[in-house]
Image 1 (cartoon, rainbow, N blue to C red):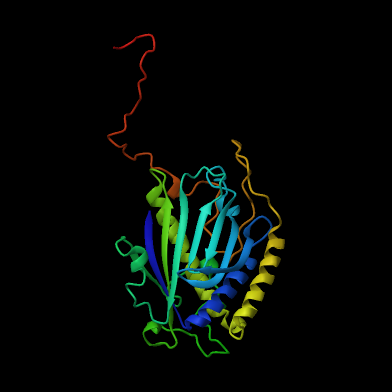
Image 2 (spheres, rainbow, N blue to C red; image 1 turned 135 degrees about the vertical axis):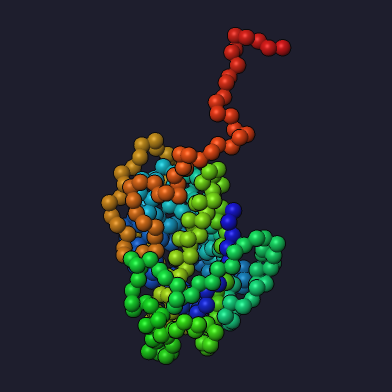
Length: 309
């Protein structure tokens, strides 16, 4: 298990951020979905969480076909994502070779610049974790995802006058809020656990950075919306996205024959891992890796014709 706490500051208030986040997630999911690839919404309804209050309970299937080219036998056809107030859980579908893989994200918002060091004391007070600040203006993103129109260093909102964020903006900008995210990744496979968990955190960090840049860069599109209006936008966009993906029943069988790799590339702005027909380096066990001394090199079975007493 590898746990990290991400802190992403935004030049918004918490209430503005709630609307902007919903708008960004819906629009981004629709833009990056295609037939058989993307995010399919299977449930979205009002939900009251005892700790985080009222919100929505959303269940989604996340199809990552092109991202897993050449690895179809190791990974499931899709992952299940459940989102409820303050919590996101991503797990593999039942028909998977992965023994135990999950991503758990706990989220809290405050109107500050990421200065609350005890915000997750109830959830992880005694657990070791790394604190990672994500700066939407200064942190670099992969070149293939970069758009100048979504760069907070150059973008300036016509409706709010905010933008063109300079180095050190978090110290002086008003308004400012912080999205605190406690991310736990589990991949319990000996020999691969550390590298896979680190790799997944890298992907999560990139997605958080790109998504929050977009939420701010699209502020003029959602700034005048009420919560009811953004919920209606979410509903309509989800219906359109599901039609765009198409209907695909859950996988219920396991085949020993590798499926052909997808030849379609991911959209240039999609926050996904590089595509390849070969297994990525993090899934390759080094040939010169020393064996554990407790593990025997060979296993000798007793001769059944010779009884021992």
